Length: 157
Image 1 (tube, helix red, strand yellow):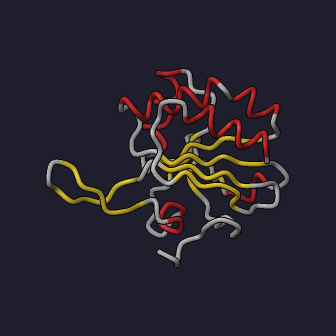
Image 2: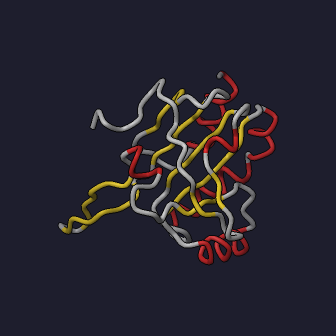
């Protein structure tokens, strides 16, 4: 697992798709702190709650000079529907390409459910400092209270 970017490393600058058909990459946020939260799937209960929690705190993240970016493998059209359905404020990106940011960070990984093994997105969050270095990692996120914990860490950075 040591081949993945970790604390103190530069966040890999890999482009991801945006819901409007454009692209976004971590360097687009240079000079600001950045929270990248990876989640498994749009419109599932935990992922919806997590996105709503981050969206509800977006103003406070902005006040802490911190940008938000939610990332899953869902396609742009699905992100558009998810944003519209739940009134999400936190921007989303689609990391659907092989060798994408989730691969570089090791959060696209083997998972198990009901005895079946499959590849899936690990719910993980990265706090990146204004210089593009990984300052904090939450490797296996529990949704309840997570956005608030990340906000406190961003304010302290």
